[in-house]
Length: 293
Image (cartoon, rainbow, N blue to C red):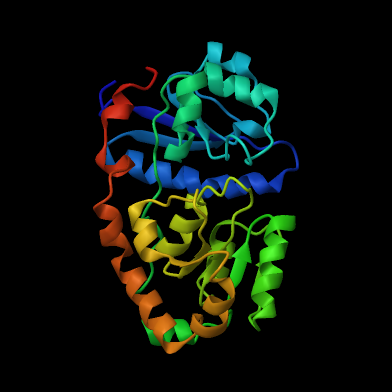
């Protein structure tokens, strides 16, 4: 498949009434930007496949008929955490991953594909220039009205971490309404930091949240577990705490003058740190191996 002839349909699966599928737009728009940089023709759709295109399906775990892959060229974009301690996924979705070409976001899933499905290309997320605003200084960050913002689904594991953070005297502002796109991004840019704690015990690093937040010019403060294994750009440009350091970080370091200096510097270097990483925007080989439209 030549780069010039490539035609992609980025299909977002949205069950009736399920507004949270809008959260998949962040990842889909990143793919759109990168494919267009490579000269491809790209469209974004909802619940619609295109005959003469390669259909990249986002959110197939929400319900996708495997029979459609007989009539359409489809690639499943898996953004779910697989394996022990990860998401509880339906047998139908796991079968889809086994019998349909897949793109994954986390190298740690590679062993699962090797054992069950064959090779799955890994496409990491990174700096998104289309989200970038004006450069942010330490003084700019300090004036933002929200100290610590969390957005996303909340389960018992995350609630337990929130309680520990708030016990240090910090407030976690949780955005728990169905707000996505520019409206949510506007809230993110009002925060001194966005909090990332893992949803699952598998502790895969939440790249989609991270690239969106850092690209928007807001610091990311993240839990780090042994299994997290962030890509180099996220490793360098996020601020980290773990099980042992949580209390001291939020009590003594977070919102200190040093915090604002370090956070502002991390935002400044994120684009360059990401440029040096190997990811979708610097690798064309896997595109040539995708199903022909």
